[in-house]
Image 1 (cartoon, rainbow, N blue to C red):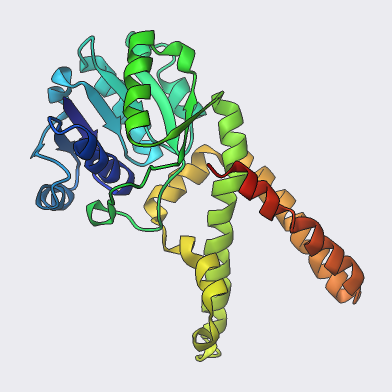
Image 2: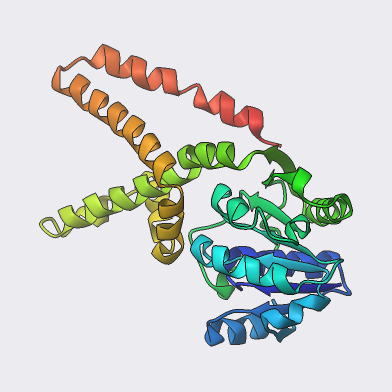
Length: 283
């Protein structure tokens, strides 16, 4: 099995490690515009050798694991040169833009739009970990536009990595992911900003930070280079989710100003049911 990995960071690197675990004959070739990442990926055993886009014609799988803006440029180039048995899939956090970008490409049926809901706040080859996708959901969009034999090939690979599959149209994906992923990253970044600005005046504030703060602000350690293009591509849905979030924050503030603690209790108590919702969707 020949796998070409374009982008050797957390998601792509973790997937390569798992593929090698489940497919002992797999050879993974790395493509990355950062020479240091390629060197590191080689040293860590993520890839077997570096490669170029021209080489993907011999691939069984091409994994596109780059920032979403770069993906729009690279995917058509990859589809231009792939062989007839090659499946190309991306792992980006926005789906409508990339599906739209190759909608008319002659080799569109060799592409599968996917979004594995997995990751950490870290980036680069050293962040790659085995087992990252076990039990995680993988969203597949426009599956009907991928040739059937390559769909089957992809599903077998994803099952081997332990992923659950959900199907969704690209616009619905981008709408829903704005709430459960993109908004949470913005919240984390802005909470971090608020506390950092306060720390300028009160140097001991971080001494008081407990596990609640650490877990809430964890995503603020994520790569701005990855997230800025995501917010750009999903701007309309992110703005809508922000408007609703800001409205709820404003309402909470108003209840505090009014000293309406009974209503505050009800607000928080109503949200407590999220425990049952989240427990209900766990595998």
